[in-house]
Length: 143
Image (tube, rainbow, N blue to C red; front, side, top):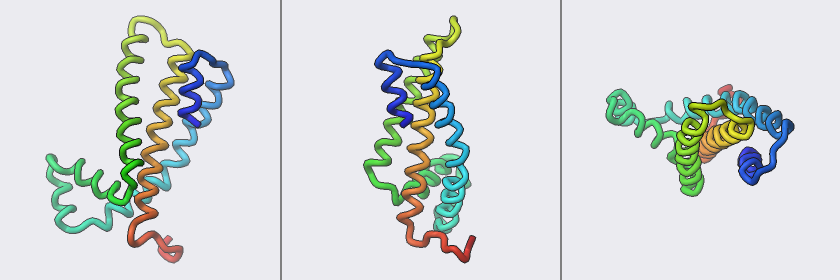
């Protein structure tokens, strides 16, 4: 939905309702954070001792953590996450360039919020998909 809002604004149509809708989608990130965080911690707790040792080495810590978290994520979802992440970085640089001397317009704010929300939701989907495909998902008696 966030991508749809982004495309609608890029095509030239916007309204106050779109901004309010996008703000609602952005607040939904807070709700999705908790299950994704719990799934991430569960996935990291299942790592081998060698992987845990590498996580303390600053050269490997981020790579090992991401490899463990996204191990069971489908390839297409990992590629989508990388693409949206790259688009977010490029769009953020463009946003800074356009709004640095001037004040940001409402269109720019909606576009930045929509691409930000899309990146977060894609990361949550990748984490939760990887957790759902793991060998030992959480059982109800472990909650």
